[in-house]
Length: 443
Image (cartoon, rainbow, N blue to C red; front, side, top):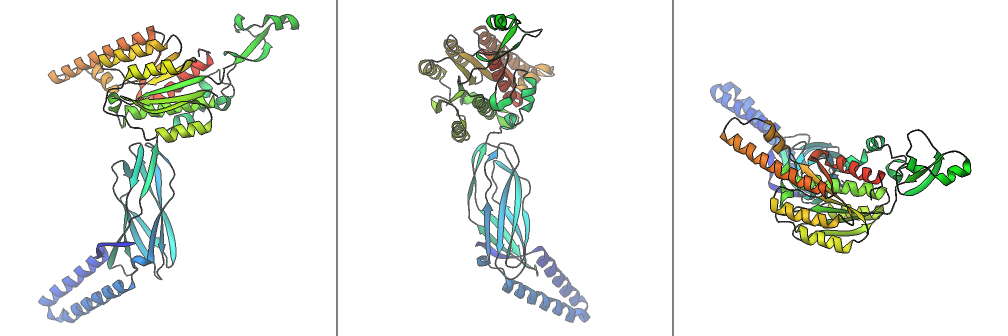
């Protein structure tokens, strides 16, 4: 432990004791009979002060280490752990202070820890990550007092720590609700085996009212003398390619997070679900040029590599090159795939390039375009204007809403699946759209 200048300082108890001595001396000036008492108090104070300074503890008697914290999730509570060792022969009380970090919100300013002689104590400090990516925690500062408590010693533990804040994927961890809503899911997300509609034969059963006539297996019915229905399951080992726009439009904030953070969370969620379904998942993040490219593969190791590579991706203040990226996808991926693009469209020029690029993919692939509608635009349209400024605000919102509606209508007219929901609902909406594609055998 390294001392911080000034290494010794009066504690709150020391300040009050010094104030008491000063008051006694002031009263002794007015009442000489109290002079002996005042000098006795002063002598006792300075004697205890010297004893406090001599007892310590000293820096060599203390050791502070951070405990392993693991990975954190964006805007999900985490905890920092500490272990304070006291090698001195006296009990101590300490206060721990983290160096402020703009992207973390600590629950408390400091931690109070009491440690017995030649012992140790552990403590935790809760925090909330405000931004995704790598976060560096610098030195920890602490003050230490002994049982006398007149002096406070100040030290610094220069041990740094790097936290990795991942997107919050809790939406897929609680997707039991999804399995209940999607009646085609019979074995849950572990196998993603959906009977009744699909492309691979699973089994035969007797015909029931409401079954499609197209599902009747006439040969099996003739052999058994009763109507038999062919059950299918969704084909596995299909290709799902996730495209993530990291351009300037994704820098905008919707509430507490940027559009890009919502999109990345949803992109990793659908990739995880597709992996659970046995599909091959590829990933491309791009701005003016590709930022991350992973070829379609399946397996837990591939998903782990994807999460490790993508957790600290950041959007850039540049125009995305839709034409180059989508042309490259068309040339490189010839097998029919589900292409899920996370982007935004407000700028007419950018929207035109995006629409043209997606249209070239439709003949071979099934394309899904995922957007986040801006609640600020909806609120501007819902609130009647009361002055000129609000009228201009409403006019701009109407223009943006019209451009967006035209762009989405064009996408749907070309056979592209469009998901357009508020940002907080994005992950769930995309997972539902993917499961619908799989259950209906559209891919």
